[in-house]
Image (cartoon, rainbow, N blue to C red; front, side):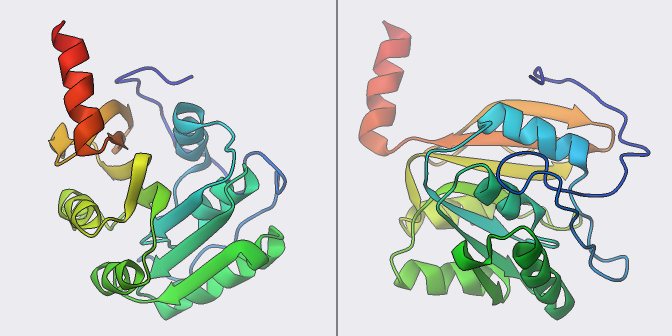
Length: 212
């Protein structure tokens, strides 16, 4: 288990693969070029130790999916379905091949789209998620805005977990609407913020309990 504020050296992390579950050990292709930064295995292992490590169903959203490693890991560990979104056509092709290699393609929905457009379309379909993975390019400091949009659009289940991967020197707010940051861990230049979503009535009850 990774403790709050723990730091790790990720140099030499090795090839990216599925860490655990039904697809354990499956190597994942990288996206050609230097524009996509896949989540290192050590960071991925730490993330799922904090939020899992295994799931009893639920739907996942992998926004800025890149190689699809986080969503595929969630499927391997028991999520029912996962939606993958990326604006890079090459990344979408890699996600498809990785999902097939991990034998989760039948539970994967993959779209070529910007994050903002995808959220609008998914919201119109009434999609709601138990697990959300946000790993935008580090130059984009927009994860808090995207979380707020998902809440407003009713796309988060009560008790949903949102994982944000970001630069270690950039801190997102502790609360974003009904989302509260429960964990913050750093791994070299990378940080992971774990948010839990609590609907308004439940949040009020929790606050009352904390004050008593």
